Length: 221
Image 1 (tube, one colour):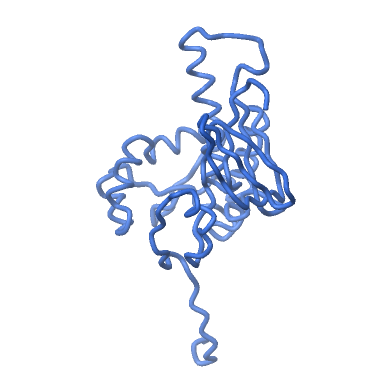
Image 2 (spheres, rainbow, N blue to C red):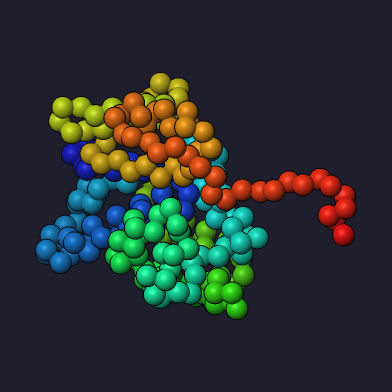
């Protein structure tokens, strides 16, 4: 590992991308504000997204029937969190730091404008999720965020010098100063075993978004 700080983000979905991009944006802004300007390429941290599959942002692509409902037009955080009965308390703190307004502004500053439909859902004006995907991928390129596909994490360990060691399927090992887990939900508790081995506690998974597949032909009409 070189002298540049390394940050790994496990998961190439919307959360992983948004996290990676904002780490780069905030770090660049911090260095400017503290007059820590330099032309050295190793000045900013190396940020890498590890994605298990062969493609990133797949759920973004199918979100909202392929149009991607980015957020909801509710600027009252106290009202917004009522829609999340199992996460109301935690989300109240999160939305106070980054709200719907901030989301709309973030995309607008990058040329993606959103529209509000009658039910409050907000979509890109283009009506296609590819607009959101292209925005995130374009920002990743501009901010030098690395993306590794087909990279399956098997084990995480932490050394005495506070570095994380990531063991990958195939035998490769990566080392980083900071690690973010953005892998999304798993239907079974066993799917989190690789995290429990690090000492993290896992709440029992419960269904949140799922499909009713009813084959009774009488319902088709």
